[in-house]
Image (cartoon, rainbow, N blue to C red; front, top):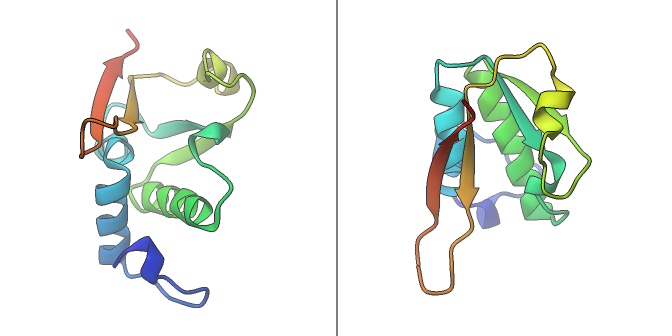
Length: 117
């Protein structure tokens, strides 16, 4: 199932959610599967305002909850610097999982993990 195939009343199975997050948000999936922390901080600018982006945002939150992760959405600076630490000051931050947008020369998106230690 692709995001284009989802209608306003369509119900998604857990398998559909796994496929969508795995394909569109591999960094998010890795963060949700990580045992290093039980919370994920997400900057609100990580998703746009189109219907598909908002649906993907909802899928990300639903997937994280299914994996037992708390999700904190932060706002503020466009670059997101220090926003996560300020939003959840008592949390232990294990790393950053980011999905890098594809470049024009590369047909596949790359994911990377950057340690915050």
